[in-house]
Length: 273
Image (cartoon, rainbow, N blue to C red; front, side, top):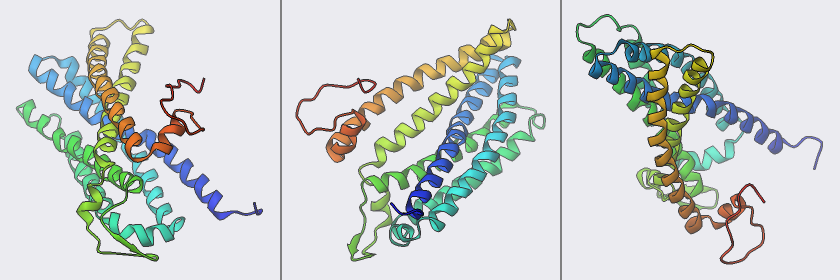
């Protein structure tokens, strides 16, 4: 390997940015669902503790959105600066979901600002609750469109390749590739699950510090209930993802299962043992 390998350093920089971004992106997708759930529970039960939960979670959520925006922008720049040849060819087919992801984020950010600054502006709390629904839709749609791009790279379709030029481009066919259903479903379910467990850990930590208050007990009950539902969904979708890999990318499934010798009816490997 030469002293300076631009491909290696490009991979390292992209990996570092993605690894940092995915933490805040996951929280950014999942927390709005928990905020909506907390506010809806507070309205239905007329419980100020749940409404306070939603309000505090929303304030913390803004920080993750800000960091996610910066790191997401860096990734967008890296796609063009570090991988120009890939974007020159494949970008023609996947430009639509990338473009739609930007609009989904704008949609989320606009309503998030309105949601934050209108807590005490409406007579009916239900009116304020309706403002968080576009935030949930926008954050989940953002994850949907960007995951479609990743799915496309696993099972590219919707075009014909002639040399280094793609022709006969069908953007919708490219978006609805075979990897899209399982990847999108798994990303959304796991993001909701991760955020539920994260918020549950904060409530549990507060209880362990002997802050035995109904506020923290309700927070833990709400988040763990949501975490249970999303955990089951994540496990089921994960099974479908494994079956997808077996059908379309057996090499990747074999590597994930720590099997490096071609064989049949191989056993399940846990932890690389």
